Length: 609
Figure 1 (cartoon, one colour):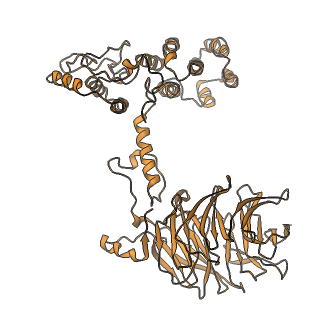
Figure 2 (figure 1 turned 90 degrees about the vertical axis):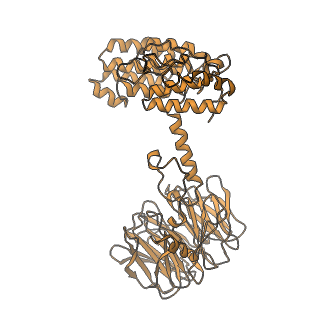
Figure 3 (figure 1 turned 120 degrees about the vertical axis):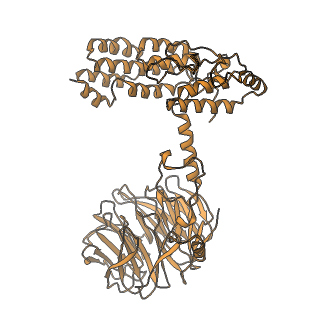
């Protein structure tokens, strides 16, 4: 956050705070404040004090400081400002200037002995804002020695001439614009592609057409401020502060606090007006989905799977009782009610997959099941009941992103790609599939197999490659929305996070009890910052993606929790399915008195990492 020191040296006496009462300089540019920046007052004159004397950097006669000027001077001599203090004063001055409090800025700079920016930068800024392009080009020669790279002069000159060219065109001065293009921009021999684009603007019939095609605000303060923002990037901050630097630092601080908040689960808002800068950001645990909101008891046997629809409006649950139940989520109360029951799955339902548009739902059974069911969720009708052979084991399924195909397979060596009518499109021989996932590109299918690995299979060119290799069986896995991360439930090991692009193990999450049961974990929350998993110790565990220790353990189930699903549209809503025959819906603490809410902690123990 401190100035990087580039471009200092012989200019240091001008750039840093001067520590005596006689250190000021008057501005060499008419109509500017003593802080070196253009006045935003209506008359353009220097801000005057109540007794009529102008506020200068070394007068020491302002109304606010006349009576105590000797005290201020002696204080300055006693205390030399640190670099950090100088930076803070400059940041505050820049922010106040942006608010139009120029007299306050003058007093701040006078009393501190600081200056907002180098005098050459001040001249340059003023000439750009006034559209005096020839003078601005001359200012670049003075700034050359202060730049990060001398080559930046060409880029800065190109930006200046581009603005000059566009303003001539907008004013209808086509010949002058053409002279800038041919006589000034082209000889720079820089960014010729952009010059070709600029030349095309000569054909614009009117100013509105020019502004639209150039995506330019037009001649005036707005476009020149944007130009200055671009030009500043080539100058060290000790010469000219980056635009709105204090606002940027405050926004970064807020973002960092949110990023470090274990329970932050709301949409990020980068607008500083939406937060208080007077307090550190903290999210209450009671806002987090770790309290039982509802217990669904309509299944009459073990519940093996649960999955929210992609739009978050429905929940599908599959059970050993041979049924699939579709639940409707109330958008306001977040309560679930039974919508319809899909029956006839003789072996039970151990896996469910929603189509991308949530029109269809595919249900698979356990290892000895050779069939899968494709249901129309809207009508409750069975569209397809697929079985290639009674010897098959179809235990997993994944939809292609186009919604017109799906892949399915099992541990007996079946791996099929089918259409919505169950017709076989392609097959891969000899792959004993444990779990499947289609990547967003629509070409690659990930499959975990009995060799403790995940491989990528391309059905178009029939190629495959190893992506993940574990030392123990991969019982299930799921993939983040962006396709970058995979979450694995590994037998006897627990939950592992892999980076699929770099093919590296990122993190092992602690706490969960994972034997050889198939347990399904999930990503969840805004930006998928959280991970949740069931466990054989009857609990639901939640981690922040960056931390290995759980931030919450949810109790309430009385047998193994087989599956957890986080609502993709309502980050504060989560479901878990258990061998105890129930589905629990988890949400924030009810709106009770504080002591009553504290009493709810018996089913949500928290572990800060």
